[in-house]
Length: 300
Image 1 (cartoon, helix red, strand yellow):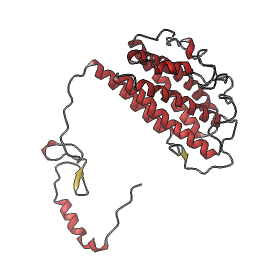
Image 2 (tube, helix red, strand yellow; image 1 turned 90 degrees about the horizontal axis):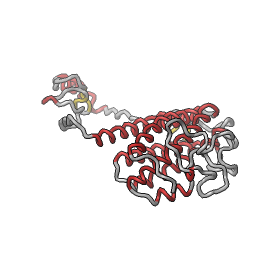
Image 3 (spheres, rainbow, N blue to C red; image 1 turned 135 degrees about the vertical axis):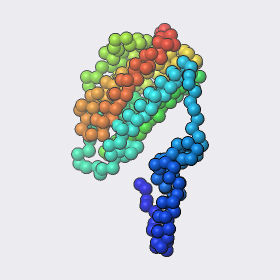
Image 4 (cartoon, helix red, strand yellow; image 1 turned 120 degrees about the vertical axis):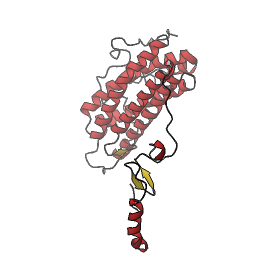
């Protein structure tokens, strides 16, 4: 919130002089005089720098192919971050609702609570894999993608953490994951689509990482996958990361599409819509990047 400046009565008799000074000032442009400087107009010398100082640098006329690739992924980062901001702007700041908690707050067993818990865990694994590949790759395109995942999904996980706290429910429940969505397809079954990169058998998790035997969430990598990724470097690490992230994104889309239709609260539905739209769009980029690096790795 911008606080208006205090009015000093001792300077009232100078108002007319201030008006004259502004009228007699430099009008070499259509800008306004704010705090003693022009803003928004063309200044002397042909500069149009918004009062920041310093001439604009002329951008080079040509760019190399690697530059264009990185710029393309950078656009993806911008779109994803904007989508995340829009998804969380409806009465939420870092997961905390501006509205008071009412008797109608979601309860245990609801889609809202189950989705928020499970998607937080799902996002957490995506961040974990992105940190692993960031430390094992020098490719700016892959590192930009990993940064996008880390920033966007940590921010969204923070929102869901705040909602659970506002609703007065625990961050994790006693029930197995996905009970709010009992008919969800498991990873490696119906998640693959036409043209999808086939995931090796070890990416099909039958349990949460570190909790074998518990029903898993769609697209979750297994503990063996994470250990394998941690042991790779360079292009091999990039390929396996992309190979894992494609089904991981599909799993998130499946979960989010259900929550977007069935959640009780507007904020959950809107975030779910954002996740479904952004990650569905990113799948194409992931597939293209994987193909450009030689496709999926063979099973270990």
